[in-house]
Image (cartoon, rainbow, N blue to C red; front, side):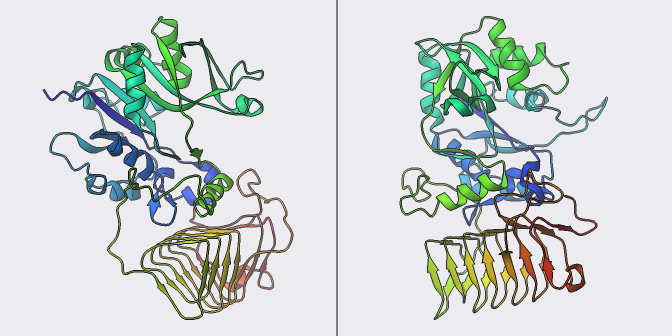
Length: 424
């Protein structure tokens, strides 16, 4: 039997419903980020940079693009004969077929996969955060403290602590208590959803709680280990970490990449972010085009002006078009004389001539104000906006649209236009 010191289990099955139409056809970890990357590239790159060469990726919701992106793991140097990356969707058992019903249930259903490596330690990761972390340093902390479970925590402002699972520790960082989203927090150490377990301890906890509905780490496994008297420790992380779970946080995290001194640097020599790259020609900037404080992916052709924006690969921006404060994803075409302000345009969209996005005053979205807010215009993937259309703020368009879908060529702020057949 092969023995690995530590393997990683990467939870990548989430829908990411707070990203609205961006995740209606694709799992959140497969959403494009920072021009050429996808969200899952960050934890996967952390694994290979930390010397972890065996990663199980647990997929469920809309997994096709994620599976295609990961393939056999070549970009992350995870195409190994022993170990490497393995995609683990839910599968049909002889008695019944069961979806993953919670974070820990997904791990429980893959005990057999983990057993094949007989690891000493199992690292549990989420596939939808943007950060760089050396898991080896966390493992050293775990070993030094003779912990059974180590939970990565991050200090957050006290007034925000009630939004998180909070760890209370003694002076040695041993966890004495924890509270899920407490009204009156006693600490500001928020769980990051990153855990190192001793394999025996994890297996014991999963088997003991296997019948729990929606088996979850925060609700069931961690409390079980704590109540069993296992030593639990909090590993404090002070680097950049961003949950890109909402459209606004996703937009902000992309915009932070183009700061003059970015807080999150994609260009560090010693901590590369790897991704599956298509073979594309270099960017082409036509004479008269303007690009300021922006990232532009390979294969893009820019004839217009781009300011403070993140442009994906294979994007076309026509002459006379001005793009500001926006995220334009791969293979999108924006034709001539358009004005694009604070928009997120998903992959393969087509925007006709003389279209304006982000016009007028803000108004709350009529269908999902909790998702579409902060003045952002959201255009779903493969959508088509015909020429001569103006679209207001906090609005969303998804699907192939025609001129008669817009009253007098206008979609007011806060309006939702999702064509039949497109899931919201």
